[in-house]
Image 1 (tube, rainbow, N blue to C red):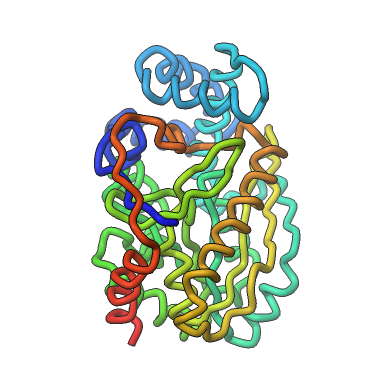
Image 2: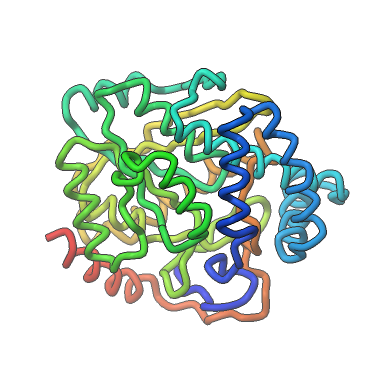
Length: 332
């Protein structure tokens, strides 16, 4: 059974204001590049204190999530550690985008199959999440010249941070597929990239207002997961690999690739059942990795949408038919 998500309330991450501003991000980025990673990490402490003191909704969302995953009452120091971990990965983006990969220890698992496909010129979808650092994927493209990487990203969300990161590496910025476009344009861009042999990375855990969702058990309660990424995979017949870039503290990251499906055509009569199975499997793998690295969860909003604003469930057949038509217009 699918639902459409509320357009407002604590569950709408698109309405969360961006922390800091262009000047603040520019100062942090400049300081980091000039003085290096170790001195720049001292900035993480005032940033953490700022979020603890000034960003009540994010602080409460952090505490609610931590109590789910830790199975106990979350203390203030737990919330501080959670925010500090998030800030550390944001700071590390500066160095990853500048190509400073020697500053990090990045353990990569499951890479062989991906490189083999890239060498044969075969594209695929990489489905990630806001668990850990998606930027760790940049290390893959930097170390393997045969890998073409395109990332689907909403450039209008967090514009100050996005602008700073784009300025650090304009070449990588040109490989972004803007998720702020209309649906058919996004699908066309993804299909073209896959046809060109690229790996197209998509964050598949957040729901935009009005999207069709599948309520899936996640950390002890149903949570809405978007169907759109899986519908795109089904319509394009593209193989899907899951990716998790987990921050392990200090300078250590763990980049994990997990083959999910081999692609191919799915009969329309089977699509509803198949999409539901895919979302459930994805949520299960996301939960498994979240439990292994609980402070890597960077969805600082009510992910389970426990606020009062609810829209009643609608039949999945009708919902996916509308989405299917929109995707098909872009893919055909």
